Length: 312
Image (cartoon, rainbow, N blue to C red; front, side, top):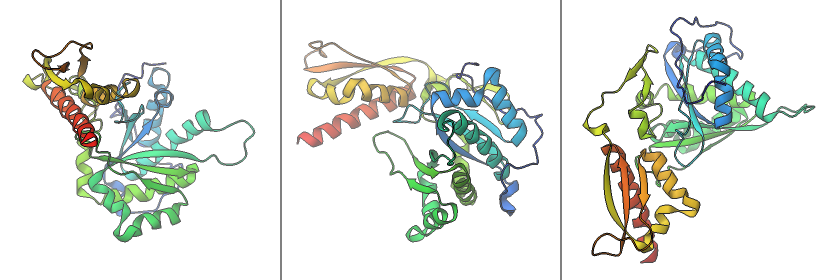
């Protein structure tokens, strides 16, 4: 299989296929380009890419949409799931998502001899500022979407444990048909929100290493961001009270791993008894770009502050 580390962009020569796997309502916004992002496991990402990128190329050709994946180990904060972004007109997006979800259902959810349509969960990524449009006044929109699609729709609260995270997860539970109808209703609402279009410029904003790596421009051509002063690797050592090291590290190193993944910085903590000169603070060395170091420092400070609040 092609390494899932490769980020794919659609071919500009791929002609849109006009046949839709599911009928969707006629609307004026159909021709307006937009996008949708959702989570998949590493194994599911590999299935979508296919051997030598064959599957993702086929899906792009059939749908006319552009399909991109975050790199291996570029996860949505707090999860071990990668991000798929599908962009194009609403109908192109619906065709592509239908192809992707159908394949994943067949490979990961359906058991032999099972006659009932399987119910699964799909987690969409939606900017916090756009969730109000999905919810509606007094919850009117989301209730209407649930009744229309018959899918379960749940919007997670904003996770304040991750510095700078402004996205929420919208979980759709149901059969493929129910999920596709819910996606249609949600994306048709999101395309009306001018703020939603702004999130298109940063499809994978959570892992700082992406700033130094190859990304794809709007025409599918590879471009590198300028390697400016902000991106040069450097190291900073800060002190953290010995009694607070546990909350920074977390159970089984979970917190430390999350901070490292979200910031893109490498973090090393000194051994017990190895303190900052003249203090009882352990040495925490953060290595990465200035941007990554700032994010990691802020997240560490937040962990320490929350622990201090609990002990006060």
